[in-house]
Length: 337
Image (cartoon, rainbow, N blue to C red):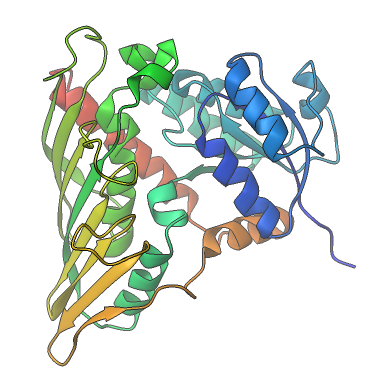
């Protein structure tokens, strides 16, 4: 009988932890415990969602439990690297919410820890790993449906929901800045779809245009990136209008030498119902494609990687590079690079 993956959570300070835990459970994992020292409202929601998973009073109960294989981390962004290093030093693999770290110093410490311990440090870039239309787009690109990918344009608008955000969300040092945070999604997708192993940030800007009462918040960001494989443009913001029926009209356009793919991930404002709207245009096809059976393979693959010490979900080098470019874009936008 094959071993099932046992997971636990450290830090419940972003609601992404719900999807991380549930998708791993759906892939066959057993959720055996969680620790959280902040945000009682989110804690109550978590207890309701996962009533059979016990909370522990001390994180050492999780770190010292030899049966636990993988730790998921959704703490305050600036705390995630230290928690991940603590978990890896305790012999656990890690799946962190994005951003997995907020400074280059943290990234260097994570690289040293991974090299020394041989553990896996993965970041759940949910706008790729938790979106079936991106899975389908990857299949189409692999089949050669649009030729060689030479550009991605990623749009990541979000709803602010200011009244429900924790205080740290508005502190620049705590959340890492809008490009380190949100734009890490789009940089991940640029690297993945262009097949790039390295890249350069050529332009980056951030601003706070409409939230002067919270000056630590950056509500707009953009960047451009290029590699020897292609080019990318990213725009992220906290401006989702109230009438939109979801948190953001996230879109991705993938330009190839023989066609293009457009994803309207979470909503189609043109009126089509549901999510995961994918449009393909090439020399012989101009159509909308059903993504309902594409699935979310990252979670089954990371489970396999943890249990079998493989690298099928995402390479460690890719995760490091994504966070490096996100942080460097943030630094460039703020005049620190």
